[in-house]
Length: 481
Image (cartoon, rainbow, N blue to C red; front, side):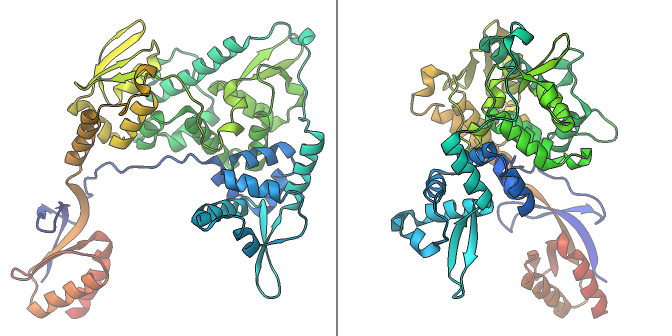
């Protein structure tokens, strides 16, 4: 009779196994797994069916937004091919670059093909050529010659009266965005009446929040990592999730993508009438207003929306080139941390990985400690994400220094993470008390050949295999009886 136990702790070498006396049906404890937060919005656009992608290219503004998202070499190829009607042989295009840039050439061609700006053509000899998408080519040619016109024009100031200044609009956008992030961290940080619509809450629940057994939603590991991302990356992540959940609300994702990209070409601070919007766009505008992308105002007869900088920067941020911003954080060699800010949001984000000691009207003082970092690691935040955040948000006085964050601090953050991750839990099964040496060796060979053998002890006839192989191992043992 072969007895089966489960759960092992796998250390850095195969000699560091410790068997726990727990039956195989129990679940295993699990270290936090790092989840990568998706940030490339155009990957989702590229995943659309060919027919829907071609529908997007009916708009010249969508074509320009897609062109902006390309890496520099892909932009160059698209412009070079803009007035070429015949297919261009792939071999001829390879001669456009030097040999050392062949990898960049491949990346550029792959991106153009993914977004169907280039279409692959094969002749009778099966040689590959590239032809530009007819819709994309035609609309971009018209756009360059005649310019483009949006499907709506700004409302006259005689109708709207005084509109918010650009400074007021920027403050409004920052306040709404901060309110959104604060509600993600802790709903008690936000005043009543600022709760989001059901469609936006589903978006957060889907990607950033999680709830168990009827408890209030809490930040997931993705959510904690999301808070340390740049604003542009955060914004496109939310837009991506919002569009991905569109079909659940009975909305065509293509229409939302088209509207969002067109919105980025509107004039900052100008007012646009609600009467020019479709029903889907009206709902989307209300949702976007909650995030600070637009400001909605009500007149005596009409309503209008005013795009903020968050909306007009949408297409320019597609290439992941984040706009430069003034940092606030100074980190000293003694692990003290100073943030020159009065924002509650900045204080709450710093609490994710540091111990905030006190907050003055324009200064947050804290310290990076082993305990605070362990809390961050438990929530799924990695050492590299913390270090990246500190560098990206470095105060101008230290931003030009090398290194921006003291090396002893970055090294210690990595060491504390390494120290915590030396041991991880692997759900496995232990087999012992084999009736014969021959059966033991057959089981070892079977597990080893399939890549599931973790450890074996030939003297005591024990072996440990991964849980994925347990069912097959049981069937093998039954057949040997």
